[in-house]
Image 1 (cartoon, rainbow, N blue to C red):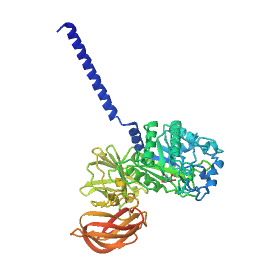
Image 2 (cartoon, protein in one colour; image 1 turned 30 degrees about the vertical axis):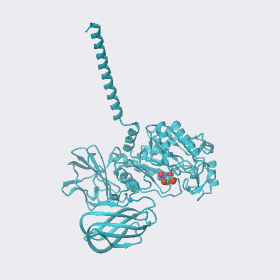
Image 3 (cartoon, protein in one colour; image 1 turned 120 degrees about the horizontal axis):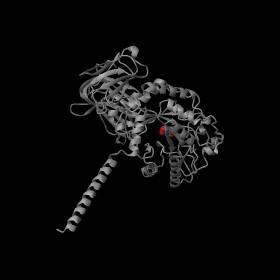
Image 4 (tube, protein in one colour; image 1 turned 180 degrees about the vertical axis):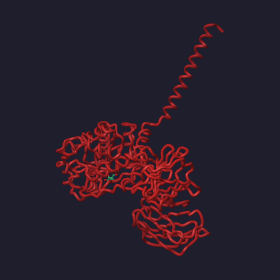
Length: 565
Ligand code: FHN
């Protein structure tokens, strides 16, 4: 083979090896790229570690002290409501003070209502004159707050209502979206919504979240289209589940969400009772506020806690004080909330737990005497201390883990036992505390979602519930006690009391038939019934008539010898 040819062949080989190496390098980079969490996943991680944010419902309606959006055409005539912005001049508005308050409360992000169902815009939008720049105030509230948040290291996000009862093109009107507009044009309204969302992301972004709400008239195709646009505009943005498609996370409202590590969630809740400002609106107690935050973290969720500023721009001092009290608590015990995940012990009425690294934080709200006993942990506790101060004795045996704390060391709102384990806490499969081995099944589950599954009614957690699809009129919830059990009573806590209008408590005979042991027409928030003792493994609540999809917080049988009858 001639010298030139050999050289040619070597060149080709070298080139081929080079190409191969390049290809391998490229494939490696591609693999690294694919393994690298998406920008959105990184922001989701940041958000789950942050756990606590401020929700702000504000607008000219604060001049009336009635509920934002909903009082339009109800407590406040539409003409008067829509003219309130002409008197809206919050001269005490200080975005820096709001941001500092959120920071001092221990909050990590802020979400402001840029437009609620009443259609009024708290930002300088080019899509309508019905905005704050045309009020006597003439200042871009959204811009000032976005900047103040960034200055104080807070992430900033925007709440934006999908429904708009003011806009002539949106089919539904006030009160409450219960009236029809004369000449609606939903496609044109969708363009309006898209234009404003684009303004928010481009002019006030990067945003932490686009918090949509009440997607009336927007089906999954329309909502999905808007979501796609938002992701294209800002790939790492988070979007909540109120755009007719699931998006990034669920948003239980005015209640603590159910424990789940499968789907991120964030409870939105008012610190008082109304979203917008209302005179003398009672503020939740510090204990209730702290327990709500800890229960959210213990359920592996976030808390978006709402304030309703006054018409002059000030946040109600009582609300601000409460938030600062939460901040003081978090300054001391925040390690048991920030950067943690829920579990391993699933929340109950008495306890919740959070975890990170080799550490588990057991949050005890109510004590059974000096101690609480939890099911066994599949890891050894190498050290136990009280984060909230004092002494704790932790005993691990086949009964489980018993934590004993003297009365003097138990804290009103939350006593935090910090456990060091002999290995990673996050690897522990969630452990149900209440309900023991009781299993549950049901004839129907809301959207077949885990969050509302039958087991949520036997988990001992009064904040989780079994729910059925809307329109369900008949349904059953069966519980498997694991073994033949003697019981002579039942306790049922109905969510949305009054939906169930006819029911029977039934037990399964050895032949497999269901035999009623009690029947009635009303359940209610805390129903209890007694009947002749029976021995059975399977029992069920058979709902024979309901006005709307029945839903149950907790159900349990009362064992014949149960001291807590
Ligand atoms: O109607 C709104 C309500 O005013 C408030 O904005 C809450 C906050 O999550 N969302 C809607 C009710 O679900």
